[in-house]
Length: 74
Image (cartoon, rainbow, N blue to C red; front, top):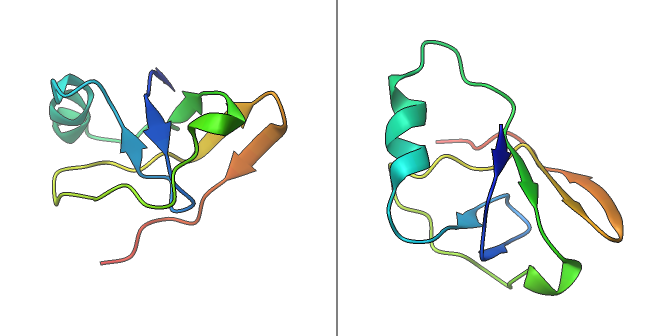
């Protein structure tokens, strides 16, 4: 799933548009799909706060290339 975002951090946490639509939809799926954010490298932030319901990205694609993120640990 290509995910829109305003920002992201080095853990794959995505800053979205505030509606929570993607996170609510993803929690209802039986199998988690690969989540890919599309962004500019300048949208990377030092840290994006992660709430318990937030689903992190698997990777992000920017003009500087593709970055993969480690799976989130509890």
